[in-house]
Image (cartoon, rainbow, N blue to C red; front, side, top):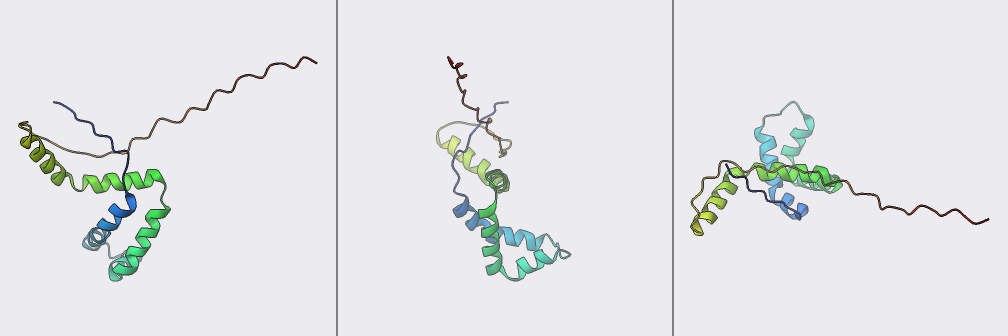
Amino acid sequence: MITLTVNISEFDYSEKFDQFIPDLLNRIKESGDSTNPLMKIACAAPGLSTKLLKTAIDAMSQKQKDALASRLINSNEDKIISSLTDLADRYGIDITIDNAEAAVNDPEPAREPEVPAEEPSAN
Protein backbone atom coordinates (compact mmCIF):
# COMPACT_ATOMS: atom_id res chain seq x y z
CA MET A 1 0.00 0.00 0.00
CA ILE A 2 1.14 3.53 -0.77
CA THR A 3 0.14 6.48 1.39
CA LEU A 4 -0.17 9.95 -0.12
CA THR A 5 -0.04 12.80 2.37
CA VAL A 6 -1.47 16.20 1.53
CA ASN A 7 -1.17 19.03 4.05
CA ILE A 8 -3.70 21.85 3.92
CA SER A 9 -2.16 25.06 5.23
CA GLU A 10 -4.84 27.52 4.15
CA PHE A 11 -8.60 27.06 4.40
CA ASP A 12 -11.13 29.87 4.00
CA TYR A 13 -13.36 28.92 6.89
CA SER A 14 -15.95 31.67 6.55
CA GLU A 15 -16.62 31.15 2.85
CA LYS A 16 -16.55 27.34 2.93
CA PHE A 17 -18.66 27.01 6.07
CA ASP A 18 -21.19 29.51 4.72
CA GLN A 19 -21.53 27.29 1.67
CA PHE A 20 -22.27 24.21 3.78
CA ILE A 21 -24.52 25.71 6.48
CA PRO A 22 -27.75 24.79 4.63
CA ASP A 23 -26.50 21.20 4.33
CA LEU A 24 -25.57 21.20 8.01
CA LEU A 25 -29.07 22.39 8.95
CA ASN A 26 -30.61 19.63 6.79
CA ARG A 27 -28.42 17.02 8.49
CA ILE A 28 -29.52 18.30 11.89
CA LYS A 29 -33.16 18.16 10.76
CA GLU A 30 -32.79 14.65 9.30
CA SER A 31 -31.04 13.38 12.43
CA GLY A 32 -34.44 13.44 14.14
CA ASP A 33 -33.07 14.99 17.32
CA SER A 34 -36.51 16.25 18.33
CA THR A 35 -35.69 16.19 22.05
CA ASN A 36 -33.21 19.05 21.78
CA PRO A 37 -35.08 22.40 21.81
CA LEU A 38 -32.10 24.21 20.26
CA MET A 39 -32.16 21.82 17.31
CA LYS A 40 -35.92 22.41 16.87
CA ILE A 41 -35.35 26.18 16.75
CA ALA A 42 -32.40 25.80 14.36
CA CYS A 43 -34.46 23.80 11.90
CA ALA A 44 -37.58 25.96 12.23
CA ALA A 45 -35.81 29.24 11.48
CA PRO A 46 -33.03 28.58 8.94
CA GLY A 47 -32.27 32.28 8.38
CA LEU A 48 -31.70 32.92 12.06
CA SER A 49 -29.86 29.62 12.40
CA THR A 50 -27.46 30.56 9.64
CA LYS A 51 -26.56 33.78 11.45
CA LEU A 52 -26.17 31.94 14.76
CA LEU A 53 -23.99 29.24 13.20
CA LYS A 54 -21.80 31.83 11.47
CA THR A 55 -21.36 33.67 14.76
CA ALA A 56 -20.54 30.43 16.55
CA ILE A 57 -17.99 29.46 13.88
CA ASP A 58 -16.35 32.90 14.07
CA ALA A 59 -16.00 32.46 17.84
CA MET A 60 -14.36 29.02 17.57
CA SER A 61 -10.70 28.47 18.25
CA GLN A 62 -8.46 27.53 15.33
CA LYS A 63 -8.33 23.92 16.55
CA GLN A 64 -12.15 23.74 16.67
CA LYS A 65 -12.41 25.22 13.16
CA ASP A 66 -9.85 22.69 11.91
CA ALA A 67 -11.84 19.83 13.46
CA LEU A 68 -15.03 21.08 11.83
CA ALA A 69 -13.25 21.46 8.47
CA SER A 70 -11.94 17.89 8.80
CA ARG A 71 -15.47 16.60 9.33
CA LEU A 72 -16.65 18.62 6.35
CA ILE A 73 -13.89 17.16 4.16
CA ASN A 74 -14.53 13.63 5.44
CA SER A 75 -18.24 13.93 4.70
CA ASN A 76 -17.24 14.38 1.05
CA GLU A 77 -14.88 11.39 0.93
CA ASP A 78 -16.62 9.74 -2.05
CA LYS A 79 -16.42 12.94 -4.12
CA ILE A 80 -12.75 13.42 -3.21
CA ILE A 81 -11.86 9.84 -4.14
CA SER A 82 -13.75 10.15 -7.42
CA SER A 83 -12.04 13.44 -8.28
CA LEU A 84 -8.56 12.14 -7.43
CA THR A 85 -9.15 8.94 -9.40
CA ASP A 86 -10.32 10.96 -12.43
CA LEU A 87 -7.29 13.26 -12.15
CA ALA A 88 -4.86 10.32 -11.95
CA ASP A 89 -6.57 8.68 -14.93
CA ARG A 90 -6.22 11.88 -16.94
CA TYR A 91 -2.45 11.63 -16.43
CA GLY A 92 -2.37 7.94 -17.32
CA ILE A 93 -1.93 6.76 -13.74
CA ASP A 94 -4.01 3.65 -13.11
CA ILE A 95 -4.70 3.55 -9.36
CA THR A 96 -7.38 2.52 -6.93
CA ILE A 97 -7.90 4.89 -4.01
CA ASP A 98 -9.32 3.06 -0.99
CA ASN A 99 -10.00 6.00 1.27
CA ALA A 100 -9.39 9.69 1.83
CA GLU A 101 -9.46 10.96 5.38
CA ALA A 102 -8.80 14.37 6.86
CA ALA A 103 -7.44 14.68 10.39
CA VAL A 104 -6.30 17.60 12.48
CA ASN A 105 -2.59 17.55 13.17
CA ASP A 106 -1.35 19.69 16.00
CA PRO A 107 1.57 21.77 14.86
CA GLU A 108 4.74 21.30 16.80
CA PRO A 109 4.77 23.61 19.80
CA ALA A 110 6.69 26.80 19.24
CA ARG A 111 10.06 26.77 20.91
CA GLU A 112 10.90 29.56 23.24
CA PRO A 113 13.79 31.64 21.95
CA GLU A 114 16.95 31.05 23.87
CA VAL A 115 17.85 33.99 26.07
CA PRO A 116 21.56 34.43 26.67
CA ALA A 117 22.55 34.16 30.30
CA GLU A 118 23.26 37.45 31.97
CA GLU A 119 26.90 38.16 32.67
CA PRO A 120 27.72 38.89 36.31
CA SER A 121 28.19 42.57 36.98
CA ALA A 122 31.71 43.77 37.82
CA ASN A 123 30.80 45.66 41.05
